[in-house]
Structures are given as C-alpha cells and as structure tokens.
Image 1 (tube, rainbow, N blue to C red):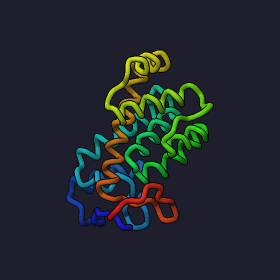
Image 2 (cartoon, rainbow, N blue to C red):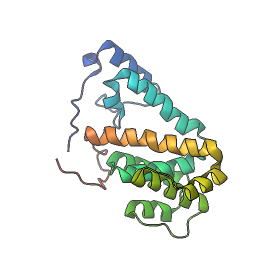
Image 3 (cartoon, helix red, strand yellow):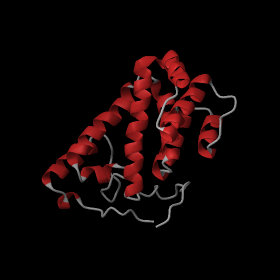
Image 4 (cartoon, one colour):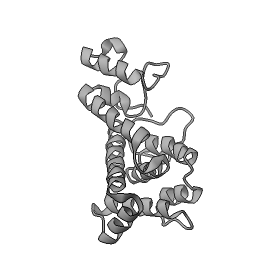
Length: 190
C-alpha cells in the first residue's frame, strides 16, 4: 500500500526543506527514488521539526545512558504499542543485533509477560508498558527503575519511548509502508 505522503523530488522542495534534506542525507542515504523512508520524508515537510527530531534521535543512538540494547527494547515496546509496522520491522532486527533476548522480543510482540528474561529486560518492558498503557509509573516500578539505571537512566528510557511515540505516530499518520519484501505485522484499514 502506498504512503499517504506525496513524494517530492529534491527540486520540488522549498529551500528550507532542501537544506534539511541535505542535512539528513549526510546521515542517511536516500533510496533510488530520492526518498529516505521511515519518518524522514514527512519530517522534511517541517524542517525545524526534522532538525530537532534528528538531534534527539542521535542522542538515543549514540549517547543514551542505558545502552543500545535497552533502548532498542524500549523502542520495540513502543512500536508494538502503536502498531507501527516500520518501527517494529526495523527495530526488531536491531534489537536482535544488540542482544535483546528472543523471549523478550516475542513477549512484546505477543503482548504477554516475558518468561526467563534478564532483569533489565523485564523491567524495561514493565516500565514502558506501564507508561504507554496507564500513563503512569507506579512507585514500585519507579523505585526499581531508579535502582537499576539511576534517575538519568529512567529519564533516558522515558525520552526514548516519547521520541519513538512521535516516530510511530508520524509513520502511522502518513501510512508509511515497510520496505519491499518486509512483513507488515500490524495490518491497517485503508
């Protein structure tokens, strides 16, 4: 299914959009059709949003205090909560590469409690699910999270799921499809 977003060539973009396109191009190679995929093409439509979003994303990728394995798991919980196909497909692969347990990945996808996963993975799933599903973090989970990662780590997890909520909402609103040959785990009505 095609995206709701009308593709534009570089020449069709406004000057500030072209500048942001070029900035993103330094970090991400465009496809043969000139599009980036993911949330990047919609973000270019609002260059200041794209600039800020890229900075936040770079922090998660390069400097989060909880490490990429836990960040990837938090992203998966978020992608699953929002039924975001592109997010799930991309980050399921990355979660595996970062060493997230298969059981944690499967439990997140199946929306069930994980069995026999490392303590930090269990706590990540519990914290992220609580915030997504109840918009609250019970004191017992808060205390466990601070004991595990410190206040900075908890802030980094919250920032990660907030950012990837924004990413997932962008992908869903513009109906951005997964790449050719990739699955669509969460079918949507047109």
